[in-house]
Image 1: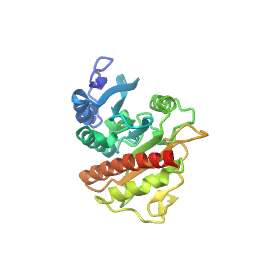
Image 2 (image 1 turned 180 degrees about the vertical axis):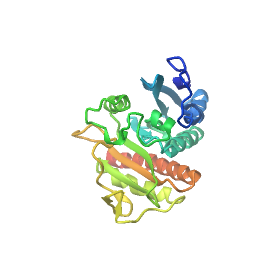
Image 3 (image 1 turned 180 degrees about the horizontal axis):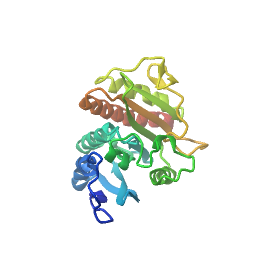
Image 4 (image 1 turned 90 degrees about the vertical axis):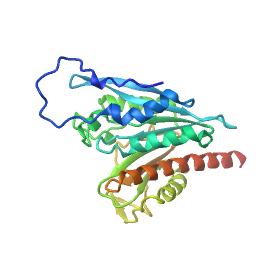
Length: 279
């Protein structure tokens, strides 16, 4: 099922020529995933919600990849990218990741993967970190934000009750891979092997301070208030990981690194769940 992206259909008559740089194409960014969803047995696409900005309609796209049935309960993971509009590397990696899974569906056995490749459509169009209202969306979660992107994503996190949440970012101030962990105690046990796999393509950031936080071998246990994460104060929170690539590295290496890291997370989490069931 292919998503329809209505951003090319203005809701008002065209005005004078816009003096700003040309907007980047959402359709072009999502075209590989839409094409795959149209032909795949495992992937379907459906928008999360619609909102209007500057006389144009936008959607937050969501894709669902359902792997072959496993032996236990289906594991639901939410994977989010492009919260910062000037970081499309995560969306590109998700296109590669989904294509890889479609050719090798056994890698997703037992999983339902909820994929959100474009969480900040106006920021992506404008090539800005913030959305068009000038806000950093990755500081707005669970703060009663009125931003439609946040309301839609928070609703998804509530309703889907994910076993794990993975967020993809790229950092133009880092010279290597690193990540944030939170939530379930398994988080670090998943991030370390993910960084090792990604490290086949890019070096790791071993600085003691990364992005203003204390880090150990590229792993940060703290984070910004308002970052995308699960519902606060759950008795049994999901694991929460953020993977960060060095944005100044070649894009193809970032895509390869994130794809490898995501595949490792699937493998390791399924293994840890199987071990826990046998204890």
